Length: 126
Image (cartoon, rainbow, N blue to C red; front, side):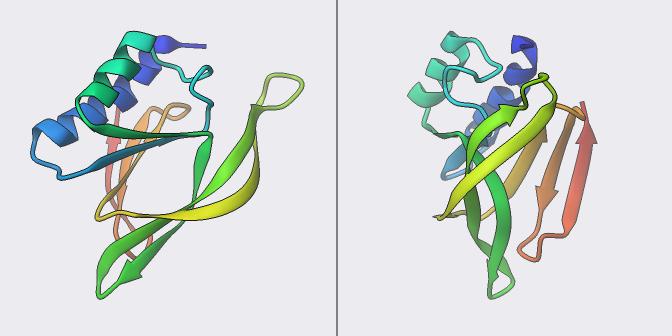
């Protein structure tokens, strides 16, 4: 697994905090042990205030009064199939309150920002 890809998601989370975000939640499909980031990067992010949610995937973005009010997530049971292909398998769902939603896509090397209606606002290719 490429650990340098994880650095992108950690950098996005830390940069958001350092630029003034009140809260930053980092959701990743992988378990903590499987995260494509070095342990010291994960620890630094947690120390600086990033809320880490492992084994979670986005289900839907929920809007309230024209703003993002929640991100509904779903538990990711596995990320790859038996042949090692990207094929996430999901389980139960939960909701977490958010103001902004950023998705760092390690497989397409994109960072995406969505509005409360689920519309893509920004796409950055990494």
